[in-house]
Image (tube, rainbow, N blue to C red; front, side, top):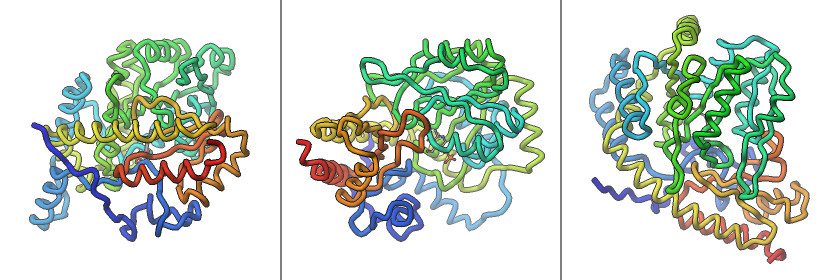
Length: 395
Ligand SMILES: Cc1ncc(COP(=O)(O)O)c(C=O)c1O
């Protein structure tokens, strides 16, 4: 069925406890009266009707007590993975966590000890580093290389030479945040072989897997490299796809018997269980109506991508990485010849835009800003025009 959600509708999210808008002034000094938040990975669109109806039904029942249905939810997760990604996980291998940040923290606690090294491919989602540091583990950065097309590649050869034997886990982001990179089957196979060779656990965070643009295909790790199954932890969630991060629910799928038993013990010890709203939203999202909404969303984001990248291309000195997935544009300011403090001043004070700061994403991110383009096109066009003005003397 073709549906037509109105992604063009400008919604005023200010004053709704929306972190992206209501925390912008404090975080960036950009006033929400006319500022444009392009930082937190959160979309400025109204929720899908199928979600609204599910919440309406919940309201009508006026019952927020203990609930059943986790098994059905896991069946819905399995259906989504099968129909959207060609991966057939066993619902009995799934665990629910309070979002994927929580899942990452739990993996670190369960499968490593203080002081162990955790490998990440930088620049990468800044919370990977925070979670590792907060857990008292050691960050081991493997900087990504840029190839002739301007795309990131993993550099496993250099990483190999830097191995100390204290590494326990690889925290992998696929598709990649912040660069919108979709990893090929060959790249994933090479990483899997590396993990097997060095006796590492591979945590594959695939939270962005539904937001992939025409021309690229995301292949889930267990399909790309089935040989890694026994040491693989899969992280997925409907929260990025449907913009339901406030409901704090993620799914951890662990096919291997040993790793699964250890994770089950860790969850039991903490008495973690899913929450009602997350359960209701995930069940509603992982349906055919949810799928139709996502198809429309990806089409809209694809046109946003073209609009924004074209505007960036017209500003001499700015270079955006090709975006294969996510709604996060990764823009390099190196060729402006400016200090990043001056770049940020122009973006925040002149353009009144709050982007994510590249340095937070680890080595290699220093000269970049990340712009969230999941907003109605009129606002995106305004942001692009303001950036063009802020760097106008480069034209
Ligand atoms: C790669 C990645 N993992 C995890 C998260 C956070 O997930 P959650 O909100 O479920 O904690 C994000 C949020 O942007 C992300 O980009």
